[in-house]
Amino acid sequence: MINPVAFQIGPFSIRWYAICIVGGLILAVYLSMREAPRKGIKADDILDFILIAFPISIIGARLYYVAFEWKNYRNNPLDIFAIWNGGIAIYGGLIAGAVVLYLFSQRRFINTLDFLDIAAPSVMIAQSIGRWGNFVNQEAYGATVENLDYLPSFIRNQMYIDGSYRQPTFLYESLWNLLGFSLLLVLRRKSHFLKRGEITAFYLIWYGFGRMVIEGMRTDSLMFAGLRISQWLSAILILAGIALILHQRRSTKTPYYREN
Image (cartoon, rainbow, N blue to C red; front, side):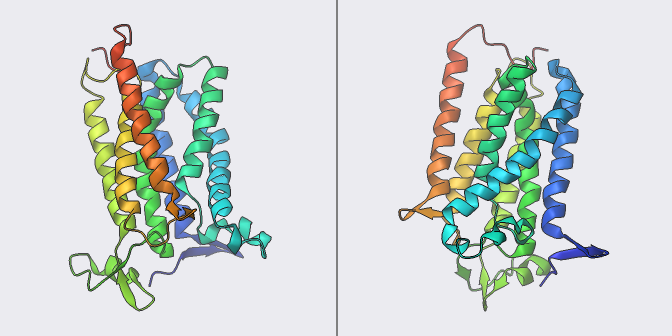
């Protein structure tokens, strides 16, 4: 089993979970700052945005998780702040981040869809990296399986939980997001191919579909009234992505993401 604490700095424990989250964030910011000038957006706008959005997204992700797992926190409310032990829900972070992005772009007079198109691939690679924090914490896994011989030993050993091997659903989602990120990098380089907003739509559909399928394999899903919350939200993302594409294609005035 991998020690969730990567190293100590005096009395402070630096956990792999935090390293994965922050590492994904740094890469996402770097990629977005490189892409922003190509769309007439200042790199500093990306940095200003993330300084506001990241802490709010973390709070949103934590509150979302706590809201649906309140039974585990009502008797120990101080545990709500123990985020280093895991327990954040990406959908909560995405919702909070999307609200901040809309308000920020309006205040800076930036087209919201342009901002989203720049951010979408970066968010996807950050999610791919962040899932490895779940791996170290032994969370976001699936049902028991007989063996995991097809996986490297370090993953296989970490997925031996409570006396059984578990489906590494964290890995499936990480690889799915990595593939989606790679496809977006290729597609957005094609001139007169994707229209404004369609990179965002691709993200919504790709992530939503992958998350819906993989969520069905997990045994630690957040539930409400007997239903998997993330699967319902995934369906909403897919429909929103399709609707966005149809709306953008309906207008001949909608510019392409890359004109030349």
